[in-house]
Image 1 (cartoon, rainbow, N blue to C red):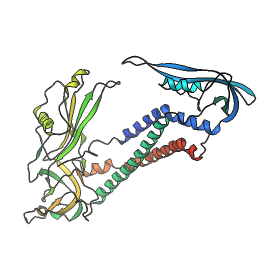
Image 2: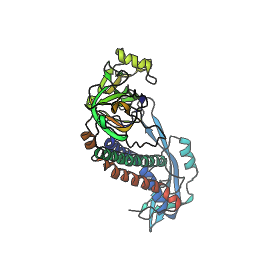
Image 3: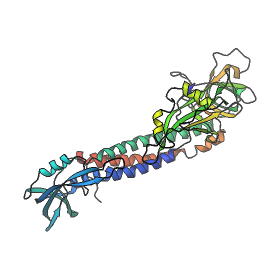
Image 4: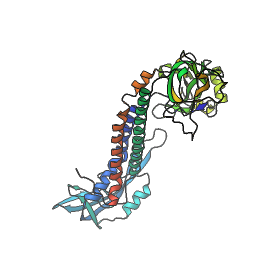
Amino acid sequence: MRGSTDGLWAEKDLGFVVVLLVVGLIAGAAGGTHVLQHNLAIQENQPTDATVESTGVDRRVIENDDGPDDYEYRPVVEYSYTAEGKRYAHDNVFPGSFRRWSDSRSWAQSVAGDYQAGQSVEAQYNPHDASEAYIRNDGWPDGWLITVGYALALLVSGVFLIRKGFRRRKQRELMADTPTEQAESLSMGPSEVTGIARPGPSEAATAPFSDEECIVCTWEVLEYDDDDDDGGSWNHVASGLDGVPFYVDDGTGSVLVEPHGDARYEIDPDGETTIRVDADETPPGPIASFIDTTSGVGRVSESSSGGGASEGDRKYRQNLIKPGEDVFVFGTVQPRAEADGGTSNAENLVIRKVPEGDATQEPLFMIADEPQSELISERRWALWRVPAAVVAIVVAVGLLLGTFGPLVGLELPVL
């Protein structure tokens, strides 16, 4: 059996929330504040007559460490106007108290070319600060795409966190409310058992990156990319889960368990092992065999040797449930169609994935090498995700209203 690795590795939701906050600060600096300033200027500013004094194109240098410097341009239209009984001079063309730059010189020249010295135009000034004004509105600043993209990411993340929080809370309640049964007294339907893992009808599996025997294994391959401006990073190459049917022996008998790719696996992260193989190093035998027989992994490409000292290095991670370990299984007990007619109750039953469309209830299918008490404890504060998700959704809705609200007549609050 080979399946996905959703939920296999250590929980990182808190780090995920922190990343969302950091990305939000970057997105706000890159576009969010500009969109808000633009929309507030359109909403609040008042018209007044202005006179164009001069026009031109401003240029700034964008330094490029990998080649020639780049340049950005903005149109400059200097104009004067009278507001609140006082005369002002300004060169801001578009709404908002920020400059709009572009890598297109022709665009800047085209905008500036629409005006001539001495021309009378209408300026829009800020009644709260008459020194701020604009004379042209050509739509949103480019940053609106960043703002909307971040808002949508917040919405999706909020829904994800809420779903996960309630799912983990439900798992806690199921494990706490369902009594642990003995193998010889198992009844049909949802149940939980605990005991020692024993090899099943077939032989135990071999771990992908070592010669160790296992009944369940999660694995991941990472490769180092040294082309990053921040000094390189470990990139995901492939990951997966391997497992074979095994018995849970609780002393009263042994019940068969069939792992499935859609089951949830809780494997103690302290048992994870990592094998690092340099790009110019020959992989150990088990890893070499794994590479040759697993699609999507492949060997390190020759082009990797052109990078830094660590370019193309790989990390092979695995975490195992081995025969002889204590295991906890929550799943649906079903008749074992392939049973040999043994007299033992456990010999005629199996815990396996409920077939799609089957009316048998399956609230949870979990295989773990941690005690039930620890699994319950880990989910004690599962619902912390809900308030975090609500905040994310509220912020997302606010960003979308701040961006699109003025298009439908919604007035933004002015502080």
